[in-house]
Length: 404
Image (cartoon, rainbow, N blue to C red):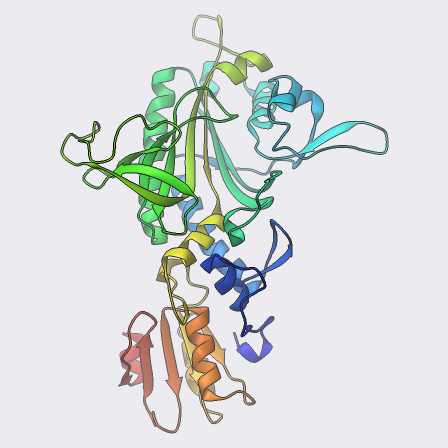
């Protein structure tokens, strides 16, 4: 992609009132744009990053046998009344009436909608387990929509739901997803700590969150570095410095963190309240066991920027970078190298602008944060100057060396 054709370009100044690094850098780099508090547009660069995050998540979800679908975002009041969450979750739900005075809500989650779908189509134990997931927009009446894209009123969520014939089967899959999350977050470039947490408006059982240590984080966790396990502030009842109960080898520390995922063992309550059942091997009606599992791809993007940045801009991990190569052409050079890179099937953002100084091009490359910067100029001659974004020195190589 030629940067001269790209929209929008970088911005020199931080957005007004921006405090979080992801807010400053993603806006300045041209990845996102704020419509209002808690509402963000994903611009072409940002959409490329989120698409790569989603692709990794999708691969890992499919590996567990889950099937992707898409569920409605506008829900009738009646379905939320079945579980009592129309009133219980009123503070976080956007509720409204249409012109016919009928009441609806915008989706803040999809447990009830999945249960309604399942009761229409599930018949016997042979249909179980059922594992379905989606990437969809969620709407939550967030009282303090701040910290850039980390805390929004409208955001993208990957939500997975599973139904099982027994609690044992549910918990087996729950543990499988826990391990899957650890693997996929590592692929995304993030080191996460699994923390025990409360279930909030979802369940009265303890759940698990996946937290990334960050000084800018809004959560407080108590964790052990030895076993990578911790506790959310809401459920922690120990002391800093004491031995970890989970492994007995490490000690408990306190840290600020950002939550990037969560998993909920919801049990049978949703199915019981909504009258969802299946017929077992003996022809008797049974209640299925239910679990839900979430990851916020847009929040992951913001977290990556909070963790991977310096004074010059973003430093994207290679797996999620909008482009692997940022090619800077000086004095009208670079077109031939650009065409060769495309012919080799490589992702490259080519800064071909003629009315911009070399210094501005280098600053933009650092701000956007692609893993590798290439420079073609009179100085480089027949070779290409190459520098990794997280390194300070550059070297000259020929094109064949670049491909290898």
